Length: 398
Ligand SMILES: [Ca+2]
Picture 1 (tube, protein in one colour):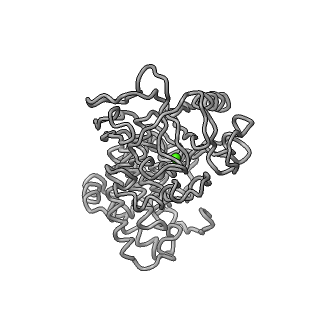
Picture 2 (spheres, helix red, strand yellow):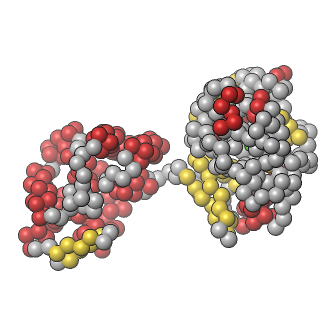
Picture 3 (tube, helix red, strand yellow):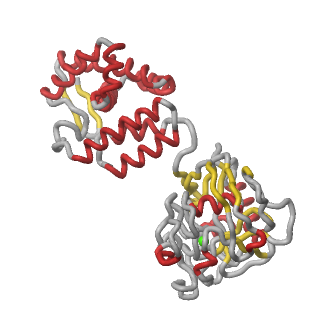
């Protein structure tokens, strides 16, 4: 019998084939213990019965199992095959039949691998609890800790298969132009106060109840052109943020984008969503809560902007992977400008009417103080300026 995956091809003897079938049987039962939805997905692949794939999956899971004493004890109680499986694994290792990148070429266990095993135990817990966000977090931790871990591919596949919005989303505008989005999870934060207009901006608790996507970068000129067939920007550059666009222009951009990509709920972020995403969990004026001393690492402002916009993404991102939230160009928000309510509020949308629309984040021509996470400003909805652009938001479903 010949089977293969990722360039590895093995010739199995009758005994080895029998052993693998025992392992696959165990895998089926192990998956059943893990998760009903997982089993459903797996059964589809069992239909074609690609034994090499199943064998690989088993080896991935079995290693995790062996590394987790609690789960091992549970499975041993509930599944008598476990002992024979361990013997089988040893035999397979002796026969040289192993998962890609595993025993045959596996280096000695490193500290990172040992730590990764502990992290994987937590990931298994999140998977068992169907905790999508938790699993995403632990997977990111694992990728950071030991990105070449041989178990990574199987774990990534299982996390990706979980229901719920994905951590990152890329929207294709055609011609090689894309928009990258970052998932912003629900949560609470203290919004405000604002020093530019202190009378309007009392600090208050805001809770955002649903996840949404926010574009990783300000909308660039090539993205704008791909949708609008024109570029009004003063400082030309395909990767520079579009500017000289009014709030009304942005609504046209969003409407045309929805026509181009039906069913995708694009929009401008609300002011609360913008500040929540800008803070990225920080409570201070800037991305990390520190003073403006390190702002130049994260923002183009009047102190380092050289009187122009700059290509997006050249400064450091904030903790949630968003670039240029501080500086480069102000970003239009959906809301009319108005006073904050002092009381705690869920999903604020701003006043129901007004004369000005909110802009946030400061720009290349603003002092550092205007680039604070809390700094609010406003402009006429029909007005445009060479320091005002936008960032796209998108609902998290479908
Ligand atoms: Ca900005």
